[in-house]
Image (cartoon, rainbow, N blue to C red; front, side):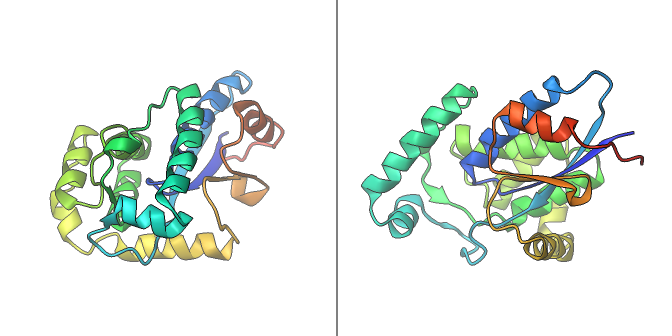
Length: 211
């Protein structure tokens, strides 16, 4: 028996990275013998983002009204991240990328049983190494480091329809923000990067699904 968990996220969402760390801590708190199966689902925070992305300072100034406001929000996230062992490189990040190809890569990884490794690698590439994960060459390198050969895949049209379908699914579920955790088909849900104890309680209080 396994606990099926859908994790809806975007790889440029810092709270999704924090949520991943808290999710990992929550799993440790579950009762011995509890098995889980996580599936990462796509959610583009900026579905209308140009393919080449946007200068990060320009984007965040437009979004939050001023660069100073953006920096204040970054400081709050940096503090929360540090508590989870994440040291955000906001000062070195130059672009806000389009994440559609990154989600295609995550979909591909799901077909090969490597989703968690690829999601982790994408988070680290963007938030810790300040790399442009909208660039296909960068994505190919990130995939390779996670043990995935994705060069030909990214240049093809494969995975596009599947990612669009999953994004449509998320909208149909009424999901408007991420991270969002959906447990055993929606019997329970968690919105946001909740503390590990709250996640574990939600996971542990639900009857396991038999696969």
